[in-house]
Amino acid sequence: MRRHDYKLDHSKLPLYAALQDHIDSRVIPFDVPGHKRGRGNDYLRDFLGKSVMAADVNSMKPLDFICNPISVIKEAEDLMADAYGADEAFFIVNGTSQAVQSMVMSAVSEGDTIIMPRNVHKSAINALILSGAIPHYIYPHIEEDYGMVTGLSLKDVERAVKEAPHAKAIFIINPTYYGVVSELEAIIELTHKHDMHVIVDEAHGAHFPFHDDFPCSAIALGADMVASSLHKTGGSLTQSSVLLLNNGRILRNHVKTIINLTQTTSASYILMTSLDLTRKYLVDEGKDKFDKVIALAESAREKINRIDGLTAFDQDSFSKKGCYGFDKTKLGINVTGIGLTGLNVYEILRDDYNIQIEMGDAHNILAILSIGDSDKEVNQLVSALYAISNNYRKDKLELDFKHFSATGVKLSPRQAFYSEKERLDLSCSVGRISGEFVMIYPPGIPILAPGEHITKEIVDYIQLLKKENGTLSGLEDTNGDYIYCIKED
Ligand SMILES: Cc1ncc(COP(=O)(O)O)c(C=O)c1O
Image (cartoon, rainbow, N blue to C red):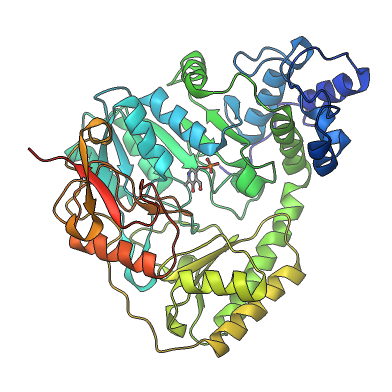
């Protein structure tokens, strides 16, 4: 199943209409926020403008309340659920990180096992620290030519289910940052047969339900819960996101209670209204807009593939082992053929060409195309890549490293997080258990998570990222010279 029929009237904008009424009514505000429609903060009003300041209000009866929505927020959430073909939707204003954490904490609790690919975003592992659930990691296929972790096959999951038949849930990424899709439909069918909840991080697939040429959305394929980053590829404001619920396996009120553990009581109406307007925009305009985005991406891929040493990949570039679909809007490019790392090219594009791409890693760069792009900018990117390949070209780079700790998890993330730790020089930490995360953001996928064995390959990889000016995060020491390890007796 692809696009579903809508059941509700998508011409409505319940939250936007209520907020607009409130602004027009010029109610005398003796509540927060204290800037009182911007009158109390000239600097901010001059920067954002009067209309933004007037829309920055707090909850009140006509505007509903995020923690227990019963009127206009609930109506807007119902429309969002309908747009995605889900039973329920929750508006989230603390990024998809909060949606991911709420999904995991709704599906598993302390001591429960959850199957997940190791290339999850840090928010999923943070959710394990918060919930006390134990990961049973699948180490997905690595496409050596691209130095890239891809998706999950049914076989991967069959093996994991055999090894961890007691698992309560499985966590899937749809798609990966680079647009790679797992064998999702078959995985959902299998894991449901084993009575596991299926929860999906669709941070990079918020646009999937709005065009038939995109891979199927996880909700359409039967997932129980999905976190969808409308702010990433849907066009809403940064931090606004949704958590979708389906199938009735996990109860709405339970999810609401879990969301409320970490959710603000002062949700931004600007962010929530951006979700309401974006839902209508995607329903009305999504198909046409994404037609253009797909055409732009396909033409850019073709042009880039004519540049010697660069490979703009798509589904055919990958072996079948971990790629069962591909999001064409992700313009991922392997750059090792021009003798540079993705991190180098990321920096050169920014410093010399004023072009900001989404990320660079050791082998590749990623440009995300979306509804805001046009020919002009895409051509600038292609020209800049052409110039870089001429001006900076060196011998092809041969890189060999491990993305994750091969010997895996020694302590659960929560145990490790709360254990006593000692600070060691990174180069002396081989053989020890990490007490910290190590990652570069983006993509925010931990190279090391708390509780994992530190190998020489991992230390070498971190050193390489440091050398290439990758911005390390997770470590208390922002230079990445030291790492906190679990204290040994
Ligand atoms: C796969 C994945 N999941 C979740 C997130 C978290 O999203 P947010 O930044 O909106 O909190 C990200 C962010 O990059 C991501 O890449």
